[in-house]
Length: 139
Image (cartoon, rainbow, N blue to C red):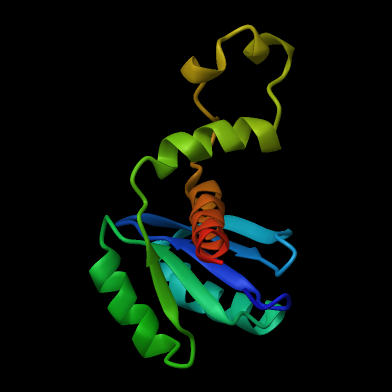
């Protein structure tokens, strides 16, 4: 990975999608859950704001349709598909690392806790990290 490369992660879905942007130092610059109607406009805004050089997206639910839409909207950006199996489970654990549970919630074992909001954006972070880990493993 080029040190200055900024990557937009995208967790495709039917009703809502996750989006995150990570820079070349693996710093999360932004992340959010989007309604599908907002996706193209929001991705366009983030690409301009953060000078995104690649889109990384999950390869499961609705990915073919989204890949086609993103390629049409952003033909200059390469899209890398990443295996997203079990990414929701990984993202749930990551959510609790990012947002530690309060005192009462901490009494519930972490594996049984449910985040209080959709975590599609955290899945997008996980997808970028999987992509970066694949690159690291190849080198």
